[in-house]
Image (cartoon, rainbow, N blue to C red; front, side):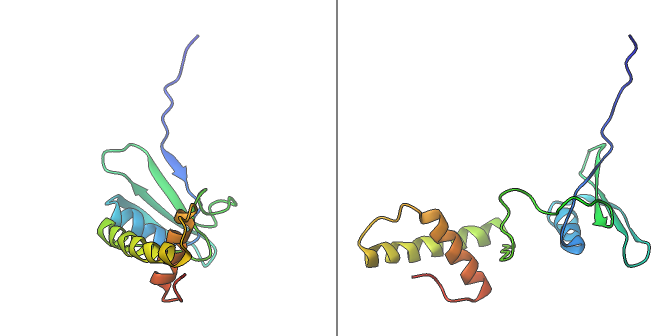
Length: 131
């Protein structure tokens, strides 16, 4: 039986914000921008390729009916940090505030990851911090 070499050339990724996705892959990850073109207001395709990869990604508007987002992603109250240092510093501030929270309540908070997440999102959005 003969076989045919199969190669993955492109993966379509549904995204909610085309420009934000483009900045992430091109600027933050350093992927090569191969194409960015639109045909009217309802269709746009962006193609990027990771360094050294024979496979590219496509995303845009009007490419797929799949819902954007990934499992585990925070939706509706998105928070982003400019660098790992910014994220680490936010986690340190949350740790300090959480320590004060546990002192006030007089007990260990077993659900500390949820508290940290709420604190970090509120802090970045300029909303009242959890106590």
